[in-house]
Length: 494
Figure 1 (cartoon, rainbow, N blue to C red):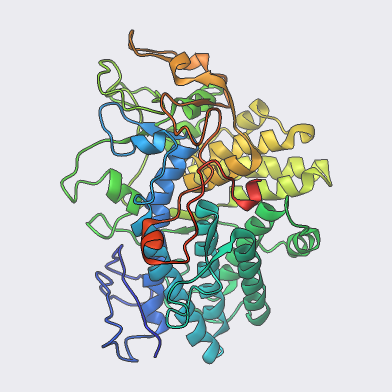
Figure 2 (cartoon, rainbow, N blue to C red):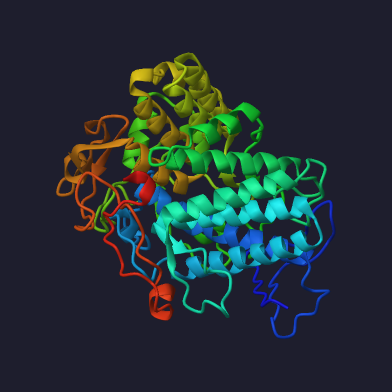
């Protein structure tokens, strides 16, 4: 029997519509696990939540800071390094292991089990989850173990594959799994689409393929693959998200809420705040999503903090900044309908301007619908689609739309599209430390700025381009490459 590593970090008390089981602290000893324990129904929820615990928390936090959607609250220090566009090897190490071991390893076992029994619905679902996890890691680190990563006995020190190689591999896996599945095929117990057939997993897999193909389209000729996929027109009509099962209790709540907002563990420190760049952009055009994505401050107003320092000596602004609007049951979004439409707008920008405009506007409308607020028409009028400057239109509006649902993807798209762009403004131009005066209007709407302090290896007027390889890899894997500088772009951003 293959070695099984199953650790469910985020615990869910009840899996609705399937059964009532306590998924808390699932941890099978690979030396004593019985065949009855190692079933796809038991493993799948753990594989999902291993990804969710990292992607829905650490990846969200870092993405928000690196995309200047978040900034540090004055007087606290947990994520000041992120606001300075810095990532250490230590910071991401446990989350890297959580995804590799808790998600990818278990999803691989599920794939193997499902293939042996011709359970193609489960096979596709596990393949999609695994591919999503690999892509998230490539987009962060640039290179990860892939071809040698799943056989520890044969490859105790797996070589790292280039990001383009991983992309090519997971695309092939998705295509192969999609070729075998039918919409009516059953799927093992899971949280994402509880009690349903493979139909929604097919849509999810197609959306993931679209993201992968669009990310690599500037470096690889994937026109025929994109055309075939888009002609199928079988994408999600609702955000792909873990939702509907969270509980307001330790180990059972949305992972970002539990990390930053809950007091389950006795923490009352306020760290994450709205960034002045995002505040300026949304406030300039009275974007109603600002109130859907962020709470007001103690004075009932919206105000944004500054990247690059925690400014602990400030008097006026310690309680003036807004926090992300989060609840214990806030969904963890993997791919949104708005994202799908933005990708389609980008695809058609070079082929059919009318279609590109239609998908661009549909993306903004989908974002407002998901946020539960009106105002899409006003946002479209404020940021009309310009096919001659499609990258900027799409980049800025995607950045705004993702600020409330998927900050990690906002950082990825910022690096790829180049928008919102960094102007010549610095934090010192916006905030007068000596006079304790913040002038948000000094920053042009839709523009980013250089933080007070920043990683000198990243440089000015840009964001960090990659994470250093996780410490767990560099310490234990003799084939881990030499760490690349944080200004070295991942393959699709070069």
